[in-house]
Amino acid sequence: MDSRILKVKIKGDSMWPTFNDGDVITCEHYDGQSVSVGDLVVFTHPFKSDVTCVKRVKSLTEKGYFVEGDNPDPLASEDSHNFGPVSKDAISAFKKE
Image (cartoon, rainbow, N blue to C red; front, top):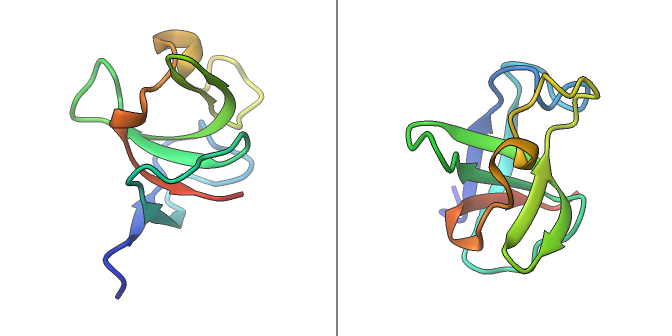
């Protein structure tokens, strides 16, 4: 298996309806590649170092990526609305969408 490919298991409902709890997605190891609005990023939660998050990039800012879950319920996702933009250094993997 290519060491640049990572399998990531979705936990929770923040990415519903695109992904369900328990789905496994294939991502590419991130080492500075270009990430665009609409792509998925995998990163360590800024305030919970033991939590890995999967969110969609909604916009690019000077401070990093503004990310959101796909779930239309605003209470279903802890994302940039809660912790601000995610720095590029925090990203471990991504998936082009």
